[in-house]
Amino acid sequence: MKTKILVSSDSGIDYMSHSYSISSIPSMIKFFEIETYFDYIDITSEKFFNRLKYDTKVKPEIMPMQLDYLRNDINVALESYDNVLIVVSDLLDYSLTFNFLKDEYGKKIDFYVTPATGFVLSTMVIEADKALKEEKTIKEAIKVMENIYNNSAMLLLNPQIDISISENVNEEKRVEEKRKGKINIVTSAGSKEIIDKDRDFVVALIKNYLDLVGNENVLPYIMYSSSYSYYLKLLESKLLIIHKRYKTIKKIPISPNLGMKYGKNVIAIGFIRNLG
Image (cartoon, rainbow, N blue to C red; front, side, top):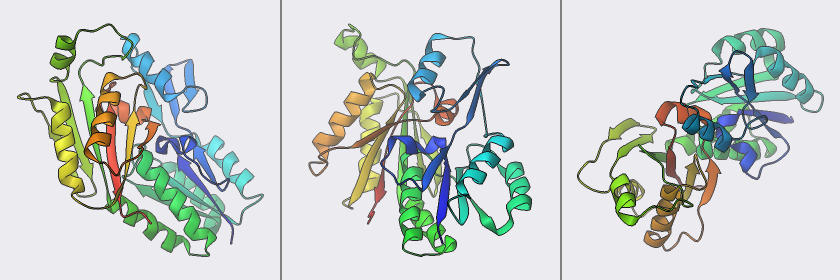
C-alpha cells in the first residue's frame, strides 16, 4: 500500500533530503489582516525573524493550514497514493480540521500529533516513510516515530540581543551579551528553563548538552533564526571542538512557531540517540 506523508512545516522538511512521498503542510502567518503568508513558501524563516527584529509593532499570528487548502493537498495525493498519513506538531491545533477530514476520507487518511518539531520531526517522518516502504503498517511507522522522539533532546538558547558576525562589535560587548538570555531544555520527559546569570550562558548550554548526551552515539543538529548570528557560529565551533567525532553538524532554520514560543533570537542545539 502506497502512503503519502504530509508533515507540518515547522519540521523544516524542505531543508532536508527526503523522498517525493513526503510533503510539507505550510502554516499560515498573518502579520496584519491583509498581510498573510504561507510559511516556507511565501516567506522564509530568516525573513520572518528579521521582520520581528526590525518591525517592533508587528505581532504575527501563526495558524494551521486552512481546511480547503489541506483538502486539496489530500485530493492530489490520493491520485497517486492509496492513503495519506498527516503528521503535525502540537505547536498548532489541528483537532477540528482533523475531525472534518476524518468524516470525509475515512480509512484513506490517518493522523499523528506529536510534541516533536524541527529536525527531530523531519527525521521522524523520513524514518516512518522508510518503514512504510518496507511494508510496515501505519501503527508500526508511528512506533518508529515515537522511538525517535523518545530518544531525542533539544536545548534552546535565546539571547536577549543577537549579535551579527558582520557587526563591528568589540570583544567586551560580545562577552557581556553572552551573559544575557535564557536556556530551555526540552525532552520527552518534559521541559525546564535555566537562567544562568553567574557565567557565560553559552557554556551553561554546552554543559547541559554534554550531560544529556553522555557517551552515547548521537546524531547532532542545530536550528537557527539567523545564519549570520554570532551565537550560531560560537555554538557550532564549541560542539565541533568538544566532540571530535562530529565532522559536521546538520543545520536548518528554526520555525516561526518556535520563535513565537521561545524568542526572536532563538537557536536550538540537539541530538537524536542511536538512530539506525
